[in-house]
Image (tube, rainbow, N blue to C red; front, side, top):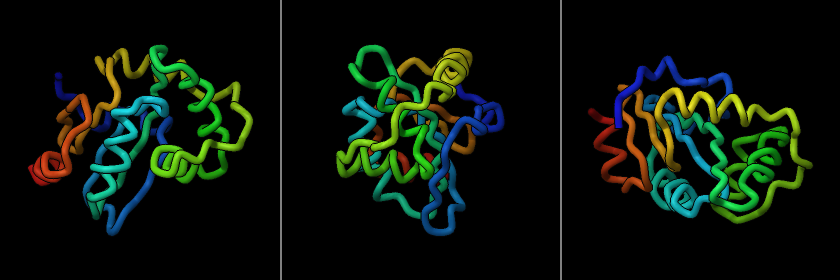
Length: 144
């Protein structure tokens, strides 16, 4: 995968979670119904501290219900909390789907950045990695 400038990411369309001092950062293109995104969020990213995660919803058509779940997460007052409740605890978002969620804009941005799979991580240095990445590899990329 090609690298991108972190500043070129549509972070205005992301929701953010800060852990510890938040000194390290990454962006996550994630599908709420994708089992690989779920595993990454639940098992790998949860073990990383001092991290700011900018989550960009990217519901893919191959996962039934992704679009609606993404729109329900977007509708929540605390999107990050709704995302983690769903991804970690499998508690579905309770808000009705937001018809104005910027899903089309997120898909277009992903296409322009050549992100075509979830999960895709973009690190502060612009390195992009697709797939459920192990905690040790995430730590290494955050340090490099």
